[in-house]
Amino acid sequence: MAYNDQDNATLVIFGATGNLSRIKLMPALYLLDKASQLHPQTKILATGRRDWDKERCIEEVRDWIVDSTGVRFDVDVFQRFSRRLDYYRVDYSQSGVWPLLKHYLESETTSDNKQRNIAFYMAIRPAEFGLVIDALGDNGLLMEKAGWRRVVIEKPFGYDLDSAQVLQKRISRHMKEQQIFRIDHYLGKETVQNVNVFRFANTMLEPLWNRNYIDHIQITHSETAGVGTRAAYYDGSGAMRDMIQSHLLQLLSLVAMEPPASMDAEDLRDEKVKVLKSIRPITEEDISTRAFRAQYTGGNIGSEIVRGYLDEQNVPADSRTETYAAMKLYIDNWRWRGVPFYLRTGKRLAQRQSMISICFRHPPQQLFRDVSKEGMKQNWLILGIQPCNCLRMEVTVKEPGLDMQIRQTSLNASLLDEGDVRTDAYEDLLLDILSGDRSLFLRHDEVEYAWRIVDPVIDAWSRDKKPLQTYPAGSWGSPESRVIFDKPQTRWRHSLDPVQ
Ligand SMILES: NC(=O)c1ccc[n+]([C@@H]2O[C@H](COP(=O)([O-])OP(=O)(O)OC[C@H]3O[C@@H](n4cnc5c(N)ncnc54)[C@H](OP(=O)(O)O)[C@@H]3O)[C@@H](O)[C@H]2O)c1
Image (cartoon, rainbow, N blue to C red):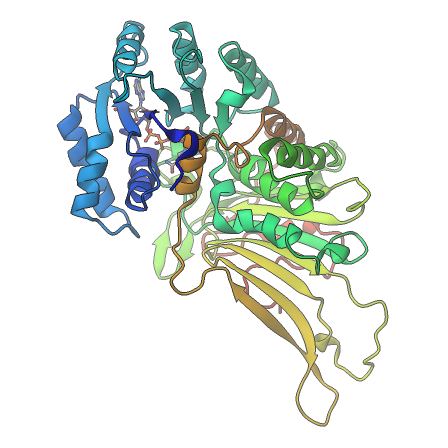
């Protein structure tokens, strides 16, 4: 096993006592250790405000891993893992803490007495990314003298274009772009990475992958969960900022980009940026036909009765935050001109589903005149991201028998074979951070262009005083969302099941 550049690395997690660390980071690091993917000298320094010591931290982390679904606990592996762990109490609002932390980190040398490489992970409130990075920079903790220094920034990067630019300016005083790892954990998902393999390791589809054969593309991320305990963050954000600006626009750029010169980080990101740059801006006049928003009311998710958004804990009674957002985008380039990309996301929808659905055009000529109209469906290609990690191609075939009747059938490929190990996106991403591979992380210009796309819509919505559209929890959102479709016969593709 080659550990590349992760030798002698310490991963310092700010916010290690928080939710992200509990449900994602610690279980992922433990699983990496279990799979022998962590270098023997890799260390993890958990930091938080809580008055814990190393023993308490190990106890807590042990409980998180035991409780984590999909993780089989192994006492021996955990013992090895716990030897990597330490806890350092840091209240980052106290300036005196930084020289002490610096001293701690510099005294933690490797077994051959070398300085350690350090990755700082910001699992903290987005409003505090700038403050902590300033403190690290001002205290010389980001200078790459004896080893590398990396900073991992969770999403969201900024709140809009202006704030993203301000944050960028602030952090770039202390480090180079190559040191920054902006996470969009969607990019760590197996199926998302498979979009590139599927497109660029097969020749079969490339000739069809353009405006001549594709009618439209739908990208959906639906959740059955409500806002839960995240209202304090979510109510100031909404579905457009929380999901479309980041995950869905990333999926769109992967589906639509040109083949890169190589799969290296810069070549890949150059191509993704070109797509985002080519998206036709949404103007004030066309917002009503290119974007749609709504908010959930009470309803049922399966057999459970759930409350509406306005009745959720910590949501203001007059909140106009959208919990459902959809938009239509056009990519004005040679390949995609005129093909609508429909993006939608929502909370408290009927099913938890993430997928990319590609709808092909009808054949140019209807040769099977006697075939019922319902029989003539368009071909679809579906890439399931979650919960089903799969690929499905819908084609038309003749029904067995003397009559010329046709029907839709599907060719299904599960991306996981029996015995394949399912990994969590954070495992991939943490490994990439330690080994310095930035291809699954966002470059600043990607973030900026994504804000440029959604900002005009968010701005217009903030000024719009009309009553907000609603949808009952457990539904597929308001039928009014179809206002964004170019053709009246277009339907949302809700699931892997064929469109009725
Ligand atoms: N949770 C998720 O599933 C998820 C998913 C994707 C992205 N994210 C992003 O990940 C980040 C963290 O989210 P989260 O849900 O983990 O938040 P969280 O549960 O609220 O945790 C916040 C962390 O920040 C620490 N903290 C707060 N003030 C501090 C201070 N003055 N000094 C030192 N530490 C301080 C807290 O420490 P104490 O508890 O010890 O006070 C806690 O460990 C956010 O940027 C979020 O957007 C989260």
